[in-house]
Length: 584
Image (cartoon, rainbow, N blue to C red; front, side):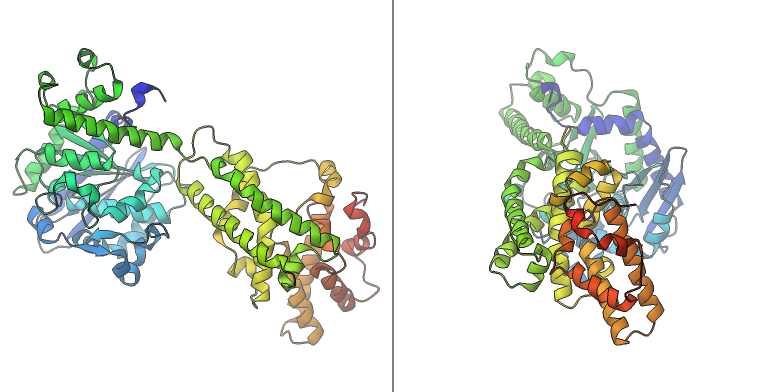
C-alpha cells in the first residue's frame, strides 16, 4: 500500500457519492418524502421509491415526533435472544463467535411496522441499477435496518450491493451488532452516515446517556457505530471509518445548532452541506500541510480535523489535548489499515489442512486394497480407523464451512488464488468428504439427501466450480483414473436412492412401480455418462462396494437378457481402472 493511502478508503467512498451526484439525489429524495408527511395520524414510517436512469432510490422518513426527545426516551436496546422468536429477520447476524447483539428498540419497532412492505420493496429493485437506500434521523435508522435485511436476502451474484446513505441518523446497535457487521467488510462498506456538527440526533445515544467516549472501548451495553462517517461543518468534511475514532469525534465536533425543534431546518442544514460538497473536494487542499508534518497519515488526520472545525491549523502543536487525540486516531487508523491490507486470503490456513486430507487419502487407499472402498467402510463403522476419520472430517468440515462463509461475504485480497489453489482444494475436500456425510445420512435412515440433507457449503463449492469450468482432456483423465475421485460428490447418494428403488420393486411395496423403474433407468444412464468421461473413481467396482451390490440387485430385476450401454461396459469394468476400456 502506498503511504499516502494509509488513512483509509472512506474518503474515496465519500468522494464517489459527491462527484457522482448520488449524495445530492439521496437528500433530494428524502426532502421530497419528508414534505409529504403532513398528517400526524398517518403511519409513522413512509417510504418513497424513485427510479433514475442509473440508480434506484428507496428513501425512508418518520414523523417529526420521532425526533431527539423520542430517541432519548426510547434508548433501550433489545437483545438478539429476545428477537430470536418474536422477530427473527436478523437472526443471521448471530454466529458461534458473536452469538449476541442488540438493536435500538424504537428503530426496531419502526422497521417492524413496515415488515409487510418488504416483499414489495424488494420486488422494485432493478438488478441492472445501483441501489441507494437513504433516510434522515430515525428514517436513516429504518434505512440501515432495511439495508442489513437486504444484504442477507439478495443474491449478489446477479444484483449489485446496495449503498445506504443516512443524514443525521442515531446509532442503532451495541458492540455485538457492530462486530457482526465488521465480520464482513463488504457489508460495512455499504453504509455512509452524513453527520452535521450542529445536529444532536446522531449523538443523543452517546452522551450524556452513555459513558464518556474514552470509556466506551471497555463497555458492552452501549451504542457503537459501523460504516463510514462523513462529519461535516461549515469548514468542510472529514471521513472516518474506525469506530473508536468516530465515537471520539462525534462528541468532540458537536456545536449547538437548530436542535430537533424544526426538522425542516435540520434538513436545510444538510442541503447546504451537500451544496458545499458539490463545489469542493472533501478533504481540501493539502499543500499547506507540508510545513507541519511529512507523515501522510498524520497530515490526513489534521486535514480532516480542520475540516470538522475541531482545530485550526495555527494551533497545531499548541494544544496537548488535540495532539493526544491526533496520536490516538493515528494509532487506530494504522490498525484499521493493517487489517484491511490482510483482506481475505485463505491460503494461510490452507496448508494446515493438508495433514487431515493426507490421513483421509491413506484411509481411502487402505480400504481400497481390502476390496470394500472407504465409503462403505465408513458407513459400516467396523474399523477403529473410522473413529479417527470422524475427527479429521470434523476439523476439515469446520474449516471449509468457515471458508465458504468468508468467501461469500468478505472481499478477496487482491491477487489471492481463490479461484485456483483455494477452489481446487475445496473441490478435493467436497469430493473426499461429502461421501462420508452421505454415508452417515443414509446409515441414520435418511432419504433424498440431495434435496433434504445436503449442507450449503457443498452446494456453494460446487456452484463456484461450475462458474469457472476447468477443461481437462478426456485422454488425461483416462490415464489418471486409478487415483481419481468421483467428480460428482453426490454419487453415493444416487447409489443409495437406487438401492431404495430396487428394494421397493423387489418387494412390491411401491405404489408406483413405473416411477421407480424410471428412476433406475435414469440412474443407469447417469453412471454410463460418468464412465464415458472417466468422471467416476474405479473404487465403485470393488467387489464389496454398494454400487456393485446395487448392480446385482438391478440385474435380477431387469433379467439376464437385458442389454444396455452400461451393461455392456460392466462386462469389462476391470479395464476401466487401468484406463484401457474403450467407451463408445
